[in-house]
Image (cartoon, rainbow, N blue to C red; front, side):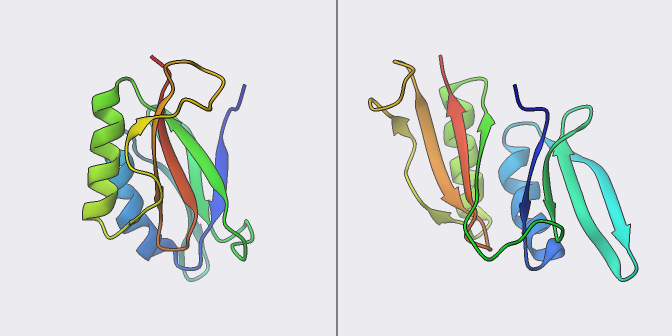
Length: 124
């Protein structure tokens, strides 16, 4: 079981503008911010507590992958649409993924401004 995960970003403010919109489609919001000496150094998204972090602590030189659980196929579709509307890049439109271990795996993949692969998945 994963408690939380984080991805490194080059510009926290620019990445937050994307993730505020994209993760908002799943009902996630900023649940914690960590300041540094020059502004915000990390933002945690979640429901009651942070489960997904964007920050400058993790290296951002390679693409990272994080999957966010959706409660329905409609939420997967909504996150993808929100991410595209926020300037994201499609990396796999919403749809069934027959090659996954769960027969009803429905997912979408989008790249954030730093090229991190953010997935929304419903395992219905």
